[in-house]
Image 1 (tube, rainbow, N blue to C red):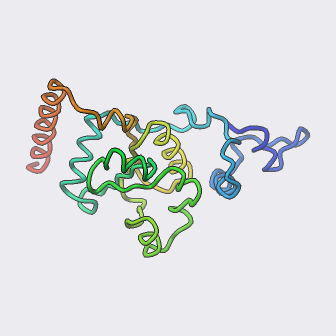
Image 2 (image 1 turned 90 degrees about the vertical axis):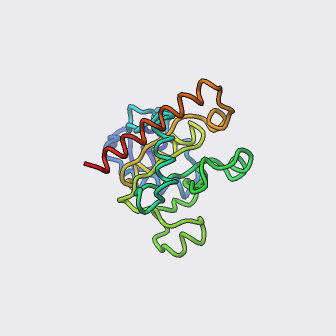
Image 3 (image 1 turned 120 degrees about the vertical axis):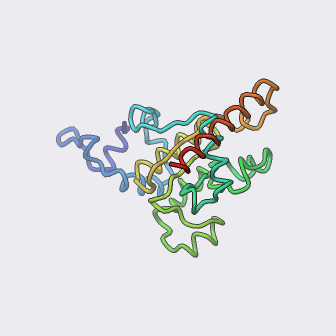
Length: 201
């Protein structure tokens, strides 16, 4: 959903209106990135009805996180990024040792996956290798930031399969209750058995 200002930016008039579906999204995002004025997008633009998000729950996220840590980026085919600010990450710690930090504001300002094609330069600036289109991207952080980051990456088609964890960082980093710890260990045992079963097939 676009505001009248967005439509006007693309030459829409009352006499000759432009339909929203005729707007080139990569061109739009490039324009908004350069102006820094993301308020021209209606809030509904980031609703799941506009562009579906593949949300995952806590057990699914934990499973992917542990698989990623155990197998590494190359073998797992995954990249997990935390879109919180560096300050927020320092306050709670990282989701896992191999999780990368790529803040939402940096995605908006730099558009790094689209603008920076030199892999060496990308590594020097962001501290990890470029995210390839064949890799599965898992996005975590605070819910609204995750939603916006997922929309930006999905709509510009910069990545392959993308999963998003909607749980807030504050909820994730809290101390588990004894009951939750038992459930967690049961879930881990079940996932481990499923992995072993797949390996033997």
